[in-house]
Length: 481
Image (tube, rainbow, N blue to C red):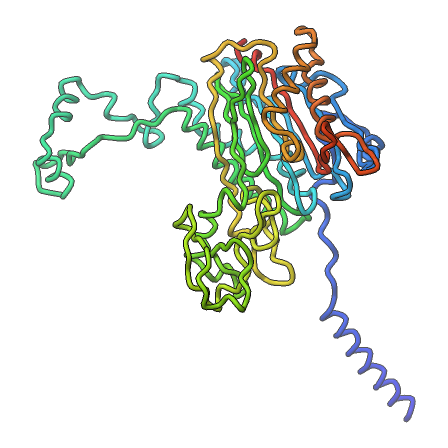
């Protein structure tokens, strides 16, 4: 009898324990979508990848062979211990849009991705973003093939404006204001006639289709990461700086705080803007104003010069909101004691006390520490795209575009970078195809500095960069060939 009781009790206890353990069962981490690696074009062995992650010696990696489009140069170095791995990634491709027997059409592609919160998003984006750009460009390929063609408003339809008889065009332009107003208001007219309008259609430039394709590709890439993370581990997020060369023009797309600039004849031409909590303050504050629920009950969309204290409630204090560039006084209320949406300045500025960039890809799971407040609604994946028409200029061997992650720009100004690159190239043989990689290596070395007792130091005994640094130097003369 006691044996049966003990058996029954044991079964009950075992069932409870089993039930409890299943309720608290920890799901295994999803597998990595892609393992950690360095850019494919570096062609590193597993041992070399491991050696590159030395935070003490911080070896500078360069190309083994000069095989990048336009003989572009590249160099990179890992951080000084900020993260276990180098969270920067890079990609360089020539992507075919149209194949033979028809005349080939392709685009050249250089890209840098600065990861944070893990290397997963940067690795993933480096493998797929150019494919999303290709997919978007394929849709408008037939239009791009004909430089004289005005992009039709609807694909598959001809623009009627281009086929009107000249006299009909004059007639349309000669419509009286009264007739136009009647047409716009829906006034009755003869059957089968098109209501007159103030203008027929906006004229869209072909280059705008390329810009739109790149912008859509960034959105598709961000959505792709969101889908993949349901099955795989795609950690963190990344900024993205992309250059596309197509039909004689360079399209520079930036979402984040990496930077691109052109050096032409000694002149510095910035080709990107940095997107930070300070530069996008008004956009972020406006979003928080429209959707205050995004702030939970912990943050305020208003900005103050410093944290508001309880003893200042009722006093007049400087502040600004999304409508203001300047500052004005307001009476401090209890709700102003909440932490500001944007706090800090320069490299220390943060959104929701968490992240220092406002545009990029990924970060779908990022939340404010110890809360359920999501960061993603405040992060935009939309890039700013700038265009440089290579065919308008003759470029020499020392005219280059420089792309670099913020690890470089944290310690070197545009002017310092320009002087360093121009000075280095000026001392190289113009026919040496290694000159651009050596210039990239020299630039990374100048930003990393030398390890001393006080840490990494650069010229003038200033603090060197402790961040990951990645640099492309792209000679522009190849675009004129």
